[in-house]
Length: 331
Image (cartoon, rainbow, N blue to C red):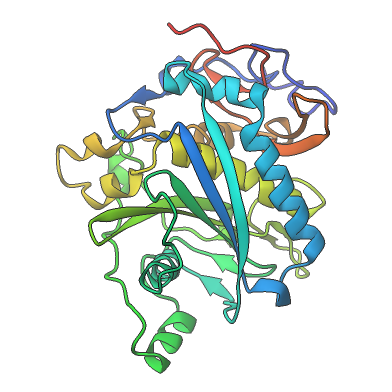
């Protein structure tokens, strides 16, 4: 069934799964009752600032992800998770994060940065219930899902004791809990195929949402950092952002479910997940034999250009689906 999966130039027909991918109704997503974000806002934060990022890459990433998240035909797929009501996405002005260029960035580091920005007042004025802050890692930085601070962050914290610290998050479920609808987080790094993740922390009783996204490319030593599908790394960043932002809007409070994984009622925090704990972007990545079939450049609905995206899971076709001209009828 996968013989034609790698054919170049082959895009799914409207309302069809990616060619060569079998229907997987058992992997369909179910709504668990948690928070979702129909009207999403997001902010790109470039770790390392202008010293680490080219103006061209910043311009292209900002433009492409704004267009992809606002595109009508792409959103027609995602509307099934919002009772077919219109969904919107607004890209707010991006910002550099200067003075910090880590060789490794852990989830603990990301969450410490979120709290630091909050405590310093940089997040004032944002609607935190609907805004996602994207931490875009510079070239060469390795991302891990370790809840502890990295050595670099620990050194900086010791040098600047007045800055806020975070209590480490509770580790996720063990391997024997894979059947749970609560997503489990395998300990991983971007050198082992991790492209990014989304999560949240609570500060002053309020959730603050974030993603962390790798500059995916082949390194000079031949190893991969992240998930490089395109030759131009900026396109890989956009595809990762598209994956994470769609998961963040359909399952924003997943981190709360993971933190309370021992609680029988932890499922109440979840939005849309499969019975195995997969989110809308996960199963297409996990089960694809050729990522180029689901990580593609697609033409924008208005014909203004192409954007790199990762096709998301669609209950309507029981698999990953490209842009469609009309939303699927609700079942």
